Length: 278
Ligand SMILES: [Zn+2]
Image (cartoon, rainbow, N blue to C red; front, side, top):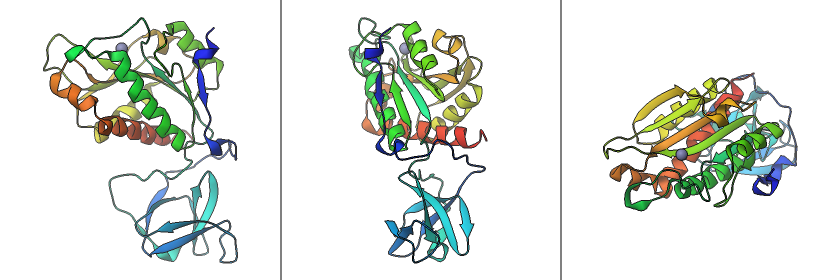
């Protein structure tokens, strides 16, 4: 099996700690109201300072104690004084650092090597756009503390069975296969998410987050027995992130802004998915 094609990327603070914390509920989001605010190791002014927040920063609060609230910073529990915070009302969820720590995500960039996937407008190859987007997704997940395994990190050909093998050989918390769609007619566009059996809730979370973050048509969640889903022991989904045969849509898909939004949506969806798992 092609272990060499399986690039395993550890985030730095994965080593620091915690595989075990379980979050019992959604965190509340608060905003810093003062110019700056110390983060401390314990809920007291005599505890050591481990970092500093500034005005407008948003933090996710997990518990409150004697006028202090607890959040996470670089994967560690930290405390800040509650009186300098106010509830945030913004739609956008701030991703507190380390919320995916302890989770293993397999990102599966579809096609590659001798298999170009679909061929889009202007001869754009699906496999290339997939790789660029997948690397952005992997980076975003690592930034949130996840251990990310890519089934390919370059233009290699990887068989479907090897992709499944990589997922099944690890303690995979979520397997996400990345694709772009194609159709004969230029006007067809939009995004959708496939699952087979065990990925339904994950598919719903990702499709919902994508539909909020990206400007493309929401084509919904669909059950399908793609091999990378069907033979996967773990929650698995396959994303079709837009049509490369749609001229206007392709221009969007090729922007860094679009790839960043996709990466953010998947991060938000995974955090929500794991938190609600109890
Ligand atoms: Zn494809």
